[in-house]
Length: 86
Length: 284
Image 1: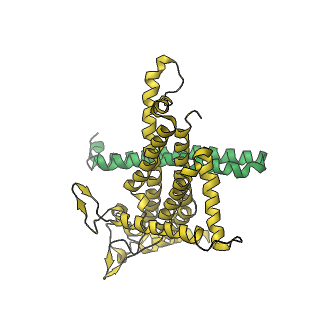
Image 2: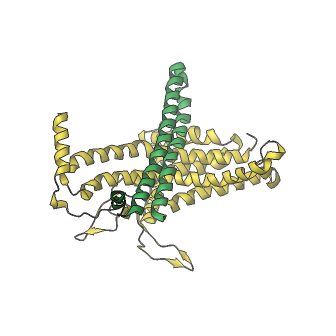
Image 3: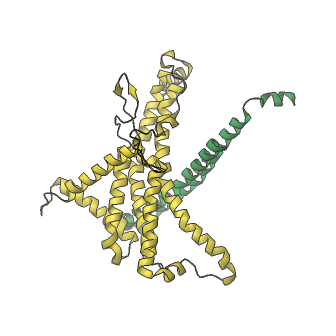
């Protein structure tokens, strides 16, 4: 027990903040990664089935990509806020 | 070849080259705003900072692009310059305006949406061109650096506020206040309305946040990524690390310039068009 306490005698707040920042960005990236993979996977399938629709689908694809990708940045922003403000 | 690369990387990590002993590198200082020309009117702080200078340059370039590409010396057989202008017009017309706006409102709102796309694109691209505007000097010579005005939340929030105000202005103008605000109430069982209506109203304000934060955080994260990878040399105090960090930073730089810059400008304008269009015709 005493060794554990000795290990935590450093700046624990800083460590907690860093863990929070990493968790926020990491979990955000996890979700967005799944979402973006889904979007491009569906795009490949649709173009393979109906190649003539590629032009129309591309606009929707990039819209969906940007909307999904922004999720990481909400996580990032929240974690940076927590890191700076707490 | 790969073994050599790994060996060099390990060597780089092991070598604490004292030549670069700056140590206290902090990427966030790159985004601080210093008042260059102080203008205070009442309680308002209208000082000219780095972001304002970048916005001014962006505005001038956007206006020049419009005049040079689409206004001057037009011919029936377009030369290369006019083709670029027509391509920009085509993209903003078909991919942005016609996707979101109903046909009765395109004439009025196409200029807004198209200039929004062009302006954000110019300001974003300007953020990845090194300019001597860092505000720091090295032996009297201004140092060159990259900074995007859109990586400041005030800029993107102002742009999002424009769209927000125009959305509700147009919604009320086309439908009348009663019909417009009634369209916010979705068809649902009466018992659930007290839960849904506050969410709908909250959703209108969430658009403001998502629209501004998306652009802001994208540009900020891109710049921080590049700065951090270059700054790794200074944090770990090893010049040899440049073998790894500079290619990685270059890869991120290219990704930002080729994809992110254009997509974010496109998204901001397309979502503005969709929001304004959905306010004009709320039943769709």
